[in-house]
Image (tube, rainbow, N blue to C red; front, side, top):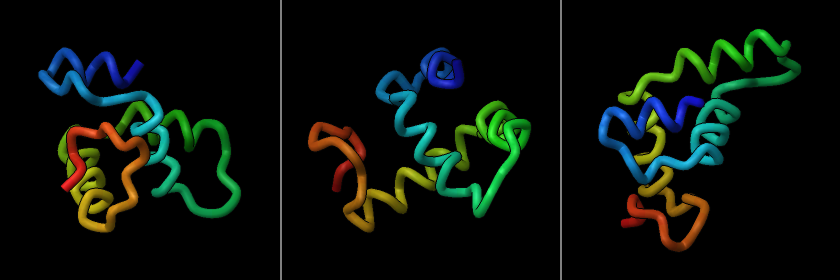
Amino acid sequence: MKADDFHLLGYEEVEPAEIWECVNSSLKGQVRLHDVVAGVLGLQVGKFMNWMTMQAYRGTLTGDDSPFKL
C-alpha cells in the first residue's frame, strides 16, 4: 500500500484516503483501471506534499484533525 511506503519515508500521518483523493484529483474523465493503478503506484512524495499544501491553502483538506491544516 502506498501509505505504508510514505510511512517508511517518515510521513507517518499520511492516510490512504488522502492518497486516493490526490490521485483521483489528477484523473480526468473516464479512466481505465491500469491508469488508476499507475497513478497510485507512481505517486511520488513531492507531488503528494504539493497537493496537500494546495489543499491546506484552499482550506479543503478532509478531516478536522489533519496535521496539514493551516
